Image (cartoon, rainbow, N blue to C red; front, side, top):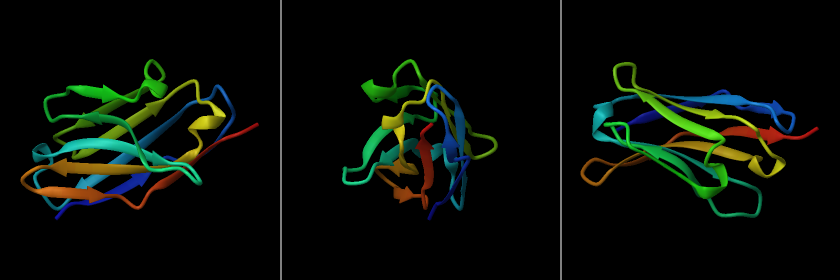
Length: 116
């Protein structure tokens, strides 16, 4: 079992920045690929970015060059630095832990609203 707790969401103006954090507990953190997903009203949940325990990253085309995912394996943390935010980035952001052997887990989500 993995417990994931997100923090760092909020209201920000277009062009602004936010940093999301996800604290993981309950299992061996390095077993999991960690990811950030988001879900906007009326839309399906989509992958924003993911990172392996070795640091390989993957980004949605819509956030490339603006968002950066990182992880601290010793501290069991994963982060999403979001710059140059746009109104279309408004969504609930979810932390995800995935392993083909050990399962998939989700956090409760944190709201990000980009509006002037």
